[in-house]
Image (tube, rainbow, N blue to C red):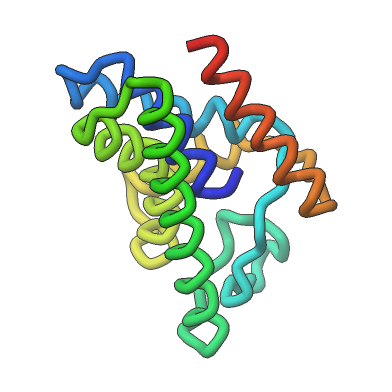
Length: 164
């Protein structure tokens, strides 16, 4: 899933606990793994490189500081901004907007992906164990078409809001 989807869903989950951001953060963190288990599309980081021992293995990759890394940072930043804007728009429209829930949900929802970056630079536990869990839970089936992938993520967001 893209970060925007994790932010919106994490914020929706955390909005159920507007007076308890720790619970909201924790449930948003767990929601990340549940959402990653669903087949989905996500954009590829251009600065991601295989380290060589196990090509294609996400546990054996790194980010290379290069012009592509700057592009990746731009895409990640835009992704986060879109997610925060969507969360504010949707939660505000539903009358469930809470800044603490937004911050807790957005932070918890994206933290597993940011911990992947930490893992790439610091290959020690607990980061190694968390990365192995993340990889184990993550779907192996990818949606290749970006338009279909974005539409499916919007459908997942809508379903989460209907359920919540």
